[in-house]
Length: 550
Image (spheres, rainbow, N blue to C red):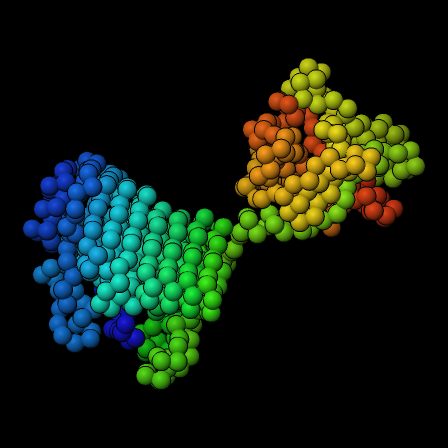
């Protein structure tokens, strides 16, 4: 919001969150015409009793923004005569195919403007809003209102430059929020901004003194140049009390040149410890950023994994003085950041090197004692040789695929895993995104690989899948990598092939009973001892619990 100070609205927000009192009359809504007719009684208490298809017809938002007066504060308070002031309970129903095409419109959405209202419990599917200031698919401007339990699927908000568009405020669920609460909402949407505008997020856009709890965001935020306040969940969280249990997952934020205050959860946020200012320090608790990518042009500033920055710039500081001569304050409590693409790239860096098949190396006779020692510690001297031999042979199989299926069936009566390199290679080299293999010094394949996504081997082993775009890759098209690295487990475990579905199978398909195990070609004796010890300890752990050493 443009205004930098405001009245404390906590009491009003608490009132807005209260449930509809027993005995209040409910007006049932079952058709598009009845939904539109809410504009004839903006203070009513409504319940949705059926799914409604708006069929892409131009929609007039429920409730319109008009200022309650001429002062700066009154400009932010919507007139009750034009705003929606009632309650709306969707009862789990779906409203679909909303279309608003008002490039110069303010406070656009299914609900345009809400003042001390409650809007809850429905899905909005296939929504498209083209508008100017304070706009969203669900609620354009929420003032002292509660928006809860709303799911947005396939939402789209396209902002257009106009009067005050430098303030912006665009979101999937709420465009602008003042003294409100957004809780237990989910938004999958595309938000697009032109040059020179601001405050955009997939759940909420420009939020002041508005808390966000239990909300999730998926989609894109795309901005032109000279924009600010861009986030996965919200663009702004100025003077919000809390962001709790919020998740931004699979979000892409793209900004042009000279953009600033960009974050995985919110672009900028916070308040001040002095309670008399009425702007609380914002606490981000149990928030998660998962696979959020941010791409910016030149001169980007204030970019963070969770929060881009506290609200501050020199113009504000000069015009307003303390406390705005310093950034607003926020706290991060038990927040996490996960980036599968970055982790996948890092894994390839961590395994750089040339590898040979592990088990032919470590089952050589000169290492027999290294196998016996941990077995003796668990099963005793008498049983140790048999157990050591069992461990060595368990991963020294020589057949896989249909031949192994014919021999072992489902493996319930025993099986040997083939852990060799297949398809005619004896060494495999990982060099960043390049993976290559040789046979007797002659190169068999070399391809560039890109991250595809996580992959699970029958729900028992979770790893990462990479794919090459080379058309001639054949049985080296995909690489499935377990998270092992020489630094952590002294070896690698992986699969490669041409069929992703087959690569996920444990005891079926062309790769049944095969999982390649690689060992650094330049490993020293200490690493050989470490990998044998680790293999024995991990596989003997359960046996040790059942049969203590003699």
